Image 1 (tube, rainbow, N blue to C red):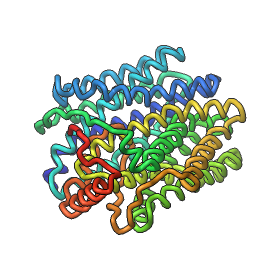
Image 2 (image 1 turned 30 degrees about the horizontal axis):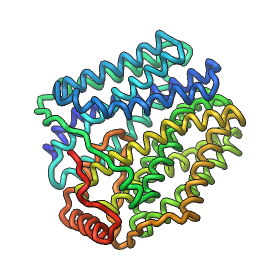
Image 3 (image 1 turned 135 degrees about the vertical axis):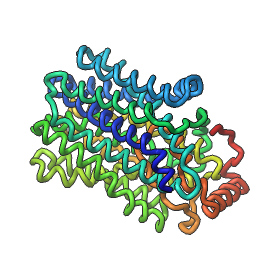
Image 4 (image 1 turned 180 degrees about the vertical axis):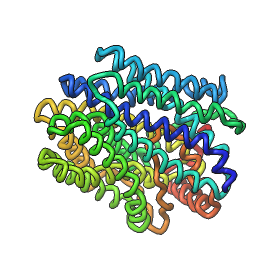
Length: 437
């Protein structure tokens, strides 16, 4: 295990530095556009470009890695990401920023694929679960620390963009200097939305809702903070607490989902998310003393919506389909993260800053209501047949699923295969869906 972690030290360091830059960049963009007085719908449109880029990046990033190898591909994506950051400091034009936001999303997806395929190749046997956990912690920590870097510069000049660009560039150094042999190139995973929606519609819907809720917050949270009167230090504290809270609530909520029907847990999370978002919309402008505890709960619950939805879907598919299933659910999350900022920004324009959280409350309440009242035929899995909950970092790549311990633990893999076979025999699934890993 020690040798494995040592061989992955460069990858983990690059991940930490990269996500610090990414976390700083997203909040800086939103904050500066809010300070400059851009209309909320325009800000939402520009920020949504990041998730458009991540979706588009899946069309070509695997080809780049296969053509150039992991280290040179990482250099390509890091250079593109750095350029997209630096150009924002030189040009202030909404359409140019939207294009750069797409480029940033495409570059970051490519960087995720390089990192996660490297982790998959180096982590073997029992080490996979530990590597998975460390990667999750590093991901949350990088994004969270990035929020506090807002205090190092001013949104009125280029200093924060220089810091973010520097972090993107510096993330290349650990990997470029490593002597570890890079892995063989990965290939993309196919997806089948129709089949997944047929066997686990609420899991797919849960992924979409998670993307809409958290995508709108990360795109417009800084705008909300400015409009309710917070300074830069307050904005960084709000965003940082929200991100880091997502790490600390993963285990207790995941543990809860292992002992109760995951559909009920998922519905309860949506209702809780709607309630806490409504409270923030009503009392968030009373100051940080009220806002920070509510934001911590909001971020903690929001960060578990997607992994619980994924766990529910994975209870219904064969082990061989986990990677292709992940590809489908990430796309559902991405579509939600594109539409979420657009919808939230329109509501902000109508009712003010509270519209951000009113949007989340509305989306989560409607989704929970559909779960409670719908007549859709849903295949349910007995609690004792549910697989253990696995936490997930905020990644746009399905390759992280290859580190899922359920793929490598013989007992869990057998349980998953049996579940998929039982479902196929009942006519509710097709365990022979083609995929590539």
